[in-house]
Amino acid sequence: ATDNPVPEPPFWGTRVVKGIQLKEYASWLDEGALFKGQWGLKGDTAENEGRPRLRMWMDRLRTANLVEAAVVHGYFPCVSKGDDLIILDEDGRERTRFTFPRQPYGRRLCLADFFRPEESGERDVIGLQVVTVGSKIGETTAELFAANSYRDYLELHGLSVQLAEALAEYWHARVRTQLQIAADDPATLDGMLRTGYQGCRYSLGYPACPNLEDRAKIAGLLRPEQIGVHLSEEFQLHPEQSTDAIVVHHPEASYFNAGRACGGR
Image (cartoon, rainbow, N blue to C red; front, side):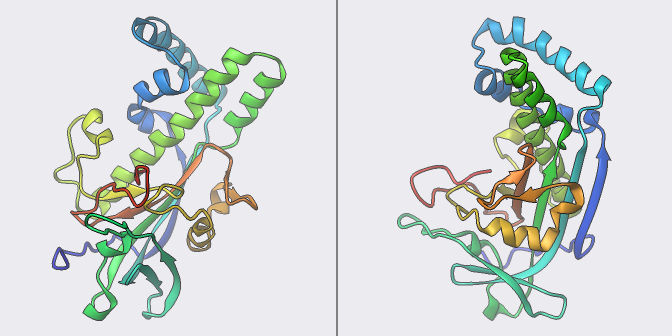
């Protein structure tokens, strides 16, 4: 559809938010992904052993002040042209553009399809975000590894990765609220993790937006060094416990295959 309402963002450009408290986004932690995916716990072990260990680690994070959560995010005017999404400045001139892959079958979807085409004469809006839980937690995991404390290392590393994802989910919800498209958000975390909402979040590296070099374009727009996040020569985010994403407000936007694997967040 090209007649869906285009949200009016609360601002154009970028904002930096630092000092986000752990309690603000801890409820977004996907414990299933942590226990099973990161810690390798199954069945009753996840409940009987995993949950007490999680409480221990969360208490330690607070006591030792190991988490330094921060976000840089922004809203930018844009239009689409074929497979390209063109980011504009306030005067309507091109700042940069992303070229996304198109499905070779089925609906032949491409992320650019979810934005107003250039020929419509309308401008659309895209949300971008980079979040991090800081470098301290990574430094602590490195110390545990060096001390041969492998269980503690694996647990804290896995938790740090999932906390970065929890922060990304939390801020993604804030973005949907700011764009006034969150009215029908699910009431439970499970519903949120099943993406039962409008305004999908696409992370770089997945088939819908696989080009990691596009991180340099996001970095050019958001300047994540303001929150201590930098790109490596291989276009990896550092600290590792950081994520970036494109937020697409279109009500038909969903996670789709543009290749062989899932094109989600």
